[in-house]
Length: 243
Ligand SMILES: [Zn+2]
Image (cartoon, rainbow, N blue to C red; front, side):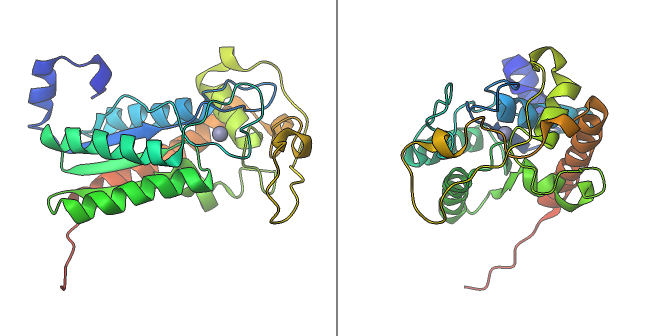
């Protein structure tokens, strides 16, 4: 059930089938010279939509903006502060809870450290505030993980490389503008730099030349399967609280 396409009546009827909602988060962020700026959002939203074809699940409109640091000076990246992201997450969950939702899956296609931390912070505050909700905060990266080990040829591939290029080739081939060279950033250990692009010229972390639409299909299928398993898990999750 794709919330942005539903009517008030359909939403109301949907609540009789499930109280679980997936909220896709992404980023407006450079993804090399060949992938669209909304790559992370596209991936998370696609997974949500495909999971919702197989299991009763609300999918909220995606949050396109995220917190980006290492790509902040690359052309096209539009970043929001972690405090904004956290407040936005809390507001959306709050409102969905008032609409009757009980189980919340925050799935982020962008896996930046500070970005993920802001989502987790929001989740922790929400479960402390409301005893009647269950929350999961997961990255696409967490969900794909080891199962792809044999499929992915590039060790350490993470951003606009083999994995993400394959994913967009599979779902949005018209948005893939050729390919890009293998690249890994060379940031100095521990030292924060102002000009990120100097240490990461093309904004690729991995090897796009190893990408294919078929790999994208297979990786996406893994993530969709994991999301469906998570929906079932969160719906049967009971926490024993010893206070
Ligand atoms: Zn990405």
